[in-house]
Image (cartoon, rainbow, N blue to C red; front, side, top):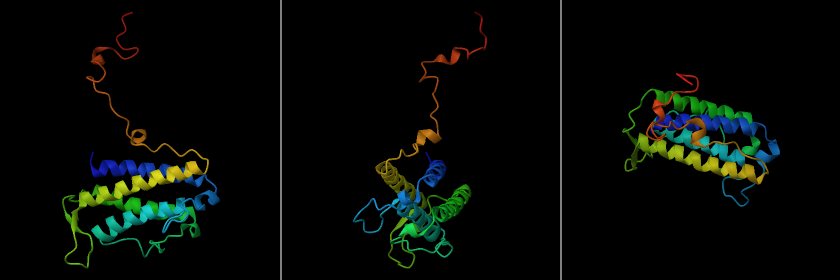
Length: 189
């Protein structure tokens, strides 16, 4: 699997999650379920954080054109209960569209990306490594959000990879049944 394919899955799952969360009461999205958490306390905090990380690494660091000015907020301690879910989703769609457009341009994934722009001794990673970092980060926090939804007494949406990319069965896996006709084809009986 490559970065573009996996990002296509993640962005589709992200959209499903947003659609689901829009149906939940605002109080549930803002409820402090991570008591004592230093930075994040509720579902909206984690949603905003996932978007901030993608915007920061992909657009701010790798592409040098992040969205921080267009969507001003405190990314360290988001306190996202002050933002309407629609605002978070709008920000998310903008980040997603920009990342999707960037990936469709077939960037050189072996390109070296300096992690701290103004530090000449900063470590570098490949763009491929940076993208996998961002995508893995989202998967981890999406699992936390799903757990929080369950803690609130709801059933989260099914966001597994197989929901979005059904596996294909090969002839070898099916025991070689490729020679058998499909219902209605070449029936002699």
